[in-house]
Amino acid sequence: MVLIFVTLGILAFGIGLGFLYSYLIMYTKIFDSVKIREQQLEMPLSRAEFYKRVPLISFNLLSLFLISGVGLYFGASLFNMQWTGVGIFVLHFLAILFIDDLMFYFIHRSLHDVKFLHQKVHSIHHQASQPFPLDFIYAHPVEWLSGYAGALVGVLVINAFVPVDVYAFWLWGLFRSMHELDIHSGVRSVVSRYIPLLAGAEHHDFHHLRSKGNYSSTLILWDWVFGTTLKRKGS
Ligand SMILES: [Zn+2]
Ligand SMILES: [Zn+2]
Image (cartoon, rainbow, N blue to C red; front, side, top):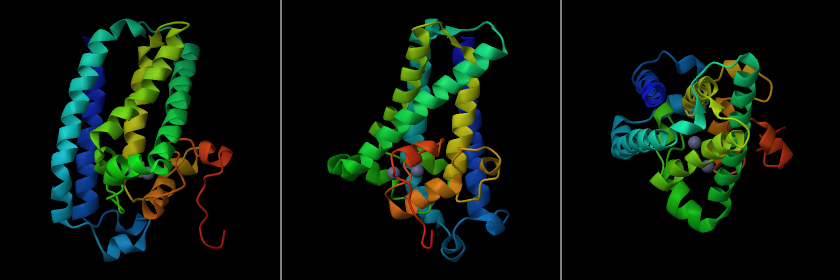
């Protein structure tokens, strides 16, 4: 029960923060001076556009809680609830991050490269050409469901050796939620300036603007390795 309670608590915290952050960006001027695109200041997201996205966002959030709760109930044995030391904690955190992010890259790239998937699935997420934080879950249900794949594979790979350190899993969940809010915020990232290889909001915001290239989510590395980094004019 602790596994389900804390994991859903982390999800709820991220979503609550997402609502607050989205509200502050859309309805106040607090972040205007640090927004990425000037056009966001000239053409702010209208409230009507925001309300149009609320039903799908709500449906996805509800499904997210339900499926996560049921999945954790049946997958409880995949996790070690005991603290086993900093070494294992860091190793498991990095392993899930790496595997999930690499899988995200290929799934995301397929959603663009395969015409059918792009038209029927991913185009919904790309209706947000100027995303706000909660847009990370404004997507076709098939798309955000596919987001489970990376985490699941990460957990199963670690389980080939030992059960997953639950604290590493929780930290990863918190980090992933915060990162998704950040890259969809349209606000310049602060943390990514200080962490090498971490993609900031500018990277994914440019992806939403162009609707191709810059497929990485967390580690900018994948776009470098597979040659899909979007070039800005003059660079
Ligand atoms: Zn996006
Ligand atoms: Zn995309």
